[in-house]
Length: 248
Image (cartoon, rainbow, N blue to C red; front, side, top):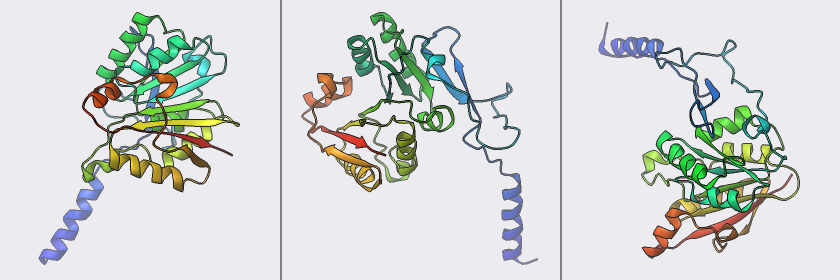
């Protein structure tokens, strides 16, 4: 057997042994202690290995917003990447008739935001999702059930090899368009990162059913600044805020 045949055989053997973990083996569970946190994480059997769905297809959840917000009146907004919860806490306190779900991948951040919401007494109309919001939208949220999206100062993943981690991409916008209600369908966007902002706006511009109606000059939503925004302004960084409208 020559060297090339040996390499090919090893490659085929490696492929056979490789375990592919699909991104949809997740379940939605309310935190047993902090009831305002909802975990959307891998379904496991105790050894941290995801358990497959019987048909090996995306695990669709029979989820309604009243599961998360029992008193929900139907007006739901979503903040993507809530950080320490500055914006959503102020917003929920100002609008007790609006139900807002924040999201963070890291449990520490989600718990910090939850504690802030608890202290301010807004857990009746605010909650935190701990997990990947893209897959939550795709696999749990029904069509035409969200009134608006907020996304302020996300991690820009500045290194090129990490760009794949950026959420603003066409498949994400497809889910946003699907779950937004008919009518005035708004996505609020803000960042301090010039390159990510340019890529984000190019992505919005290229998406067939949305339009950037205010480009880079929008004011903070209802005057509420995030913690990062206040910090960056003190450092003299430029801030880019835009308003995007989706249409059917």
